[in-house]
Image (cartoon, rainbow, N blue to C red; front, side, top):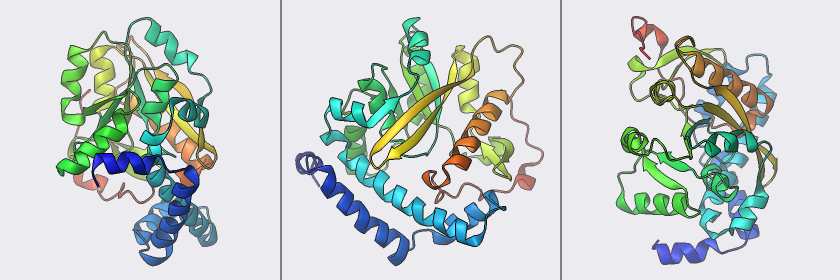
Length: 291
């Protein structure tokens, strides 16, 4: 699909996109049964107190959420700033805007909750400049398409491998630097291990290292669906400088606690198809992460 054709496609009304999402949900849940065993295993280990019936219902709702997220992401460039502003509301953006007004970047610890792809663009239209940090794709066409989607409202796509350089050269540029921090580390032996949803889980230590190295405040952002295609976002301060007396790993631990609370309140909206727990802590028992 060329960008010209894709631009035309994004102008179709939401009703068309959600009709596609309904079909996609049926395919994912009942035909392909996309990562069904991974999803149910993740849910059972995370919520041992829930019945099999409850877990199956969460899984079905997850498939609906996933289908909506996929089509909403494609729709993003076809929305007007006014429409995006209506569909994603911030409950307390003044907390972050106060930091930006002082001329400093702000680290945002985000997650795969609800539609994370809308968040950077929504921040921009609400008056908060934002980067869009991502892992670069190998396929040139896919990379071009993703870059177009994420930059459409003025957010600046930053490949993960270039993040440190960007932060060093733009250290005095006020903006949000959102990092989807709930992914499994590429090298779990260098991850920060802690208990999350009843399971030993590695987290990327990079966000905490960046906060400490550049003396930046860190916020958790919670995204909640209020109805189909409409979300609210709330900021929670995790930590701010000085960090000399903050124990190592505390920023990650606070993020973990906020994220776990969000997931428990809205379990179907997290990305359960992710193979989050494919590594075992015992294998890396002697590893010591340094911040």
